[in-house]
Every structure is written in C-alpha cells, then in structure tokens.
Length: 466
Image (cartoon, rainbow, N blue to C red; front, top):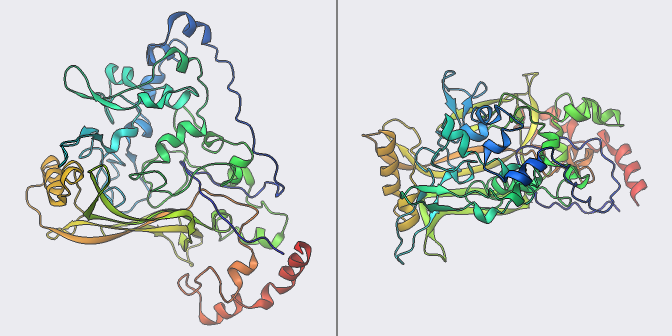
C-alpha cells in the first residue's frame, strides 16, 4: 500500500528542484572533506589576521564583498510594486510584521535591564558578518577589516565566539573567531555555516521559514548536496529564487530548471503540467514555522524578558496555500503577496505559507509603524518601542492603532520526490487545490475533480505499490 505521507523540517536561502533524483534511499551521505587550501602554509607561518590575510591570495575581495546583499542587507528591487527604483530595500530598512523592525531601529544593542535587573544583547543585525562597529552597509578600509570571512568559510569556526560585548570604549561589538585553527579549515560554505543565521531568522530557531536542511528533510541534502550547490555564488553574489517576502537580491536568480530542465519527468502527463505549475507545488507539500505574531502584546519568558506572542507549528504541520504567481509582488500595508492570475501566461501555481502579523499602523497615513525592540523586550511596553523607533526614523506625528498584515512566504525547501503530490492529490473531490479561488469555473472544476480524469493511471500505480 502506498506509504503514508510524512514530512519533516528543513531551512536556508532557497533550494529548488528535486525532480530528477532516484526514489531509492541509501545511507545518509558523509560530509564532504574540505579541499586543502592553497594558503595553508602562509596561515601556518603567519597566523590569521582577518580579511587582510585572505587578501594575500584574494586581492580586492573584501571591497567587493561590501557591495553584496549579505553585507548591505539591501538592494534595488525591480519586482515589488510601489518601491522607488532608485533606492535600495531589504532588512536594512524594510518594515513588515514577521520582524516589525529593521537594522536601522534594531541594530545590535544592549537591552535595558528588566525587572530582575538583567540585560542582554539583541538586534536584527546579529547575523551580519561584521563586527557591528562597521555595521550594515558600511564602506571603506575599516569596514573591509571588519568582515568575518571565517563565519561562512570555516568548518572549525567556534560560534561561541560570535557573541556581543562592550569593548574598552563602551561600544557594542560582535565577536569573531579569528583563530589559526578556524583559518586552517576554510573552504566553500557548509550547510552549518549557512544555517547558523538562516535557521534562526525571525526571532528563533525554525520560526521564519520553518525548515532545516538535512538528509531526513530534503532530497538534495539526502544526496549530499550543500546550500551552495544550488545557490552557486559568483563573486560573493548569491542567487535566490523568487519570494513575495524576500526582496533584496544580488541580481542573480535560480530555478529548478537550472538543473532539472523544463521536462524533468519520464511521465508525459507530469511534464505537460510544468507549463503552468511550479515544481515546488508538487514537490514541497508541507512547511512550518510561525503562522502568526502579535507585536502589540509581548509575552514574558522564563528569562524575564518579553517576546512578541507567537503562534507556530512544526515544519511538517502546515499545509500550503496555492496561488498564481508571475514573480512580481503586491505590496500593501495590509498585504504582501504574489501577483498573478490564470489568464496571465507568465503565471504559474506556486505553494505559499501564509503568515499573519499584528502590529501598529499609523491611523493618519495607513502605513505600518516600526518598533524598537529594546523597550518591550525589557518591560513589555510596546508603545514605548514604537515611540523609540519613530524618533530614530524622524517621524514626529503619528497615531498608532493595532492592525493585521498578511504575508505570503514562498515554499522553496523541504523538497521531496517520494512524497510528492500525485494526480489524486490535486484532481480528486478533496483536492489540495482550491480551483475556484484559482479562477476555474464550476464546469471546469467538475471536470478537474472527476475520478475519470486519473482513475486508470492511479489504479495502475496503486497496483504496483501493493
């Protein structure tokens, strides 16, 4: 009998595909042994002094890195409506309800003492690969020296060293592991190097995207692939897929067809579907993570600090919602989601996780207001956080009112072949697809959900699996 569909978790920048792999399972692949680095002898002799050591063999790389999204946290964005084409957008300055803040108002800082007299360091730029003194978007020689090359490139990086502290001048600094041991273990980024930041985005482990990248959760990882096998980087510019929620990009895009072609199946019926149905729709049938947050009401944790009240599910619990998407984005204060429709031939059906966030909007303008997390994290006072952010952003007059925003997150990980959707999943009366919302007529729906459409194929498949 066909095995019961089961789904586990997975996370990172955007793994697409999974259509051309064998169904047969084997033992989990062993981690790849890093190649011997050409600069090993130099590091053995001279130690590691940060980017200047890397520049001995890679001159100009540090300056180049200051221009990529992983450093700037922003870029010009061409596929999101309502944005100024001459400005850059991203985590640096964007406000939406998964985070309700950005690097400007929530730079790495020391949180005020809570009722128990305790403080801690926090901020959206915690994952920025710098030292925080030269922060997000900084340029010049000092910024080049501040780059943490090893956090992405060393398999022996001691992540305990990446913690914030105040230096002798009282500045909040992000520590780095610049040890010889870490420097002698450099190579292409591993899954761990990437996931240290991308798995904990959004305020906690598996909150934002709701997936981890392991052999148990993704067919690519099962085959021994790493993040950069799909996200093939060029001059530290990393290609990404299209996501209504993810705006900043390095100008490079990736797609399943980059590896799997536009006709990836042996079954002609399945290949016919690829013209209007994205690979992810069938091959990523579940996801997880946070489904809602309330930034107007923070909950006190066991450590005495407050966090926004969050509803979350495990990565294998959330069923996606399907919508037409032409890779352009509707951008409104109350809604961020896919633009597309059935009559638009550039649109395909994609799976999405719907997230809903409650925050404060300006009654005067309708715009979403940002929040400085420091005050509410210490005391739970959310309006103090709005006031602090408004002051930093130069907003003098506003009237905060609670409201909800809906955000569509693209499903791009947890790729499965074995448990991919089949004819029955999409074309039965209890279909996972809402054909009415996708723009189909009652007559078309009746035809598309008729067993006659798929009965012989499904019966044959069932017979083979018994």
